[in-house]
Image 1 (cartoon, rainbow, N blue to C red):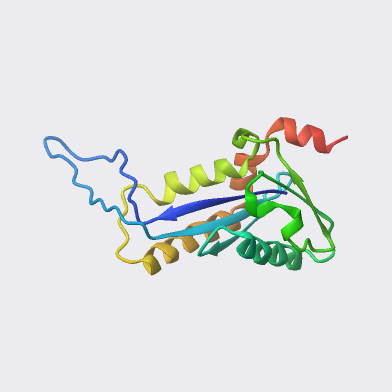
Image 2 (image 1 turned 90 degrees about the horizontal axis):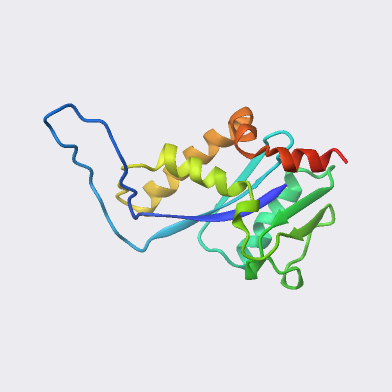
Length: 170
């Protein structure tokens, strides 16, 4: 399983939209510092996606996420591949018994397929939207992540890179 976190805030993402001629589209915009963080882990072999929305990225939230994922798969041995963020350090985390953490090389987000899940969520669910409150943002993020979790073929098509799948066969 690959793991990553992403920040989703009330800063709106303006993008292209269709509008009939001669009219010009009007898209609301806002800039605030209110954010939530989505934690995700994905199985590249079958497209299983597990997510959790948290208020921060730190070792406390990471521990909660690890415990939650481990409890969802109690009978499986999990190999979780993650980046080198400070809150991923094994010394400050109590790693569940059925899990092992492996770090990606430093500064290599292109090796983590979860990054493409974040791109998909931002593109399909967050373009040209303005949220009136942090609760509205969190509700929308929850809906988007739930939609992705329930669509395993779509997730697998995003994350099942041939070099990863081929390495699992050996």
